[in-house]
Amino acid sequence: MPDISLQPENPMFKATEAVGKEGESYLRNTDTEYKILNDIASRLGENTQATGKIKLFTELDTCDSCSKVIAEFAAKYKNIELEVIHNDGNRIIP
Image (cartoon, rainbow, N blue to C red; front, side, top):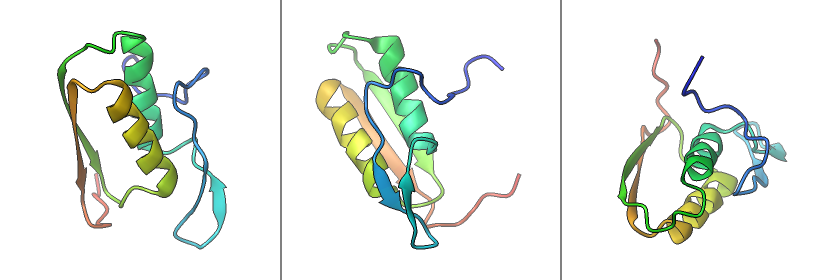
């Protein structure tokens, strides 16, 4: 399926371990925030002057790993407004 964020082969921003809802720590390299922002960063490359706005919706609060990736993305692409919208842990049933 084109234009879907898959797990990046060469991520610009690295995932780290973070505690999940079961209390276990694991590498967060499959989290959606991580995959989406790395996908966008791979398309932008070194075009750090790119402008725009990203609204990133997540059902759950962002884990420490994703929060780090979000901060790194925002620091690299300063002219892109990044808004993270949380759904207070409420899952959306398709």
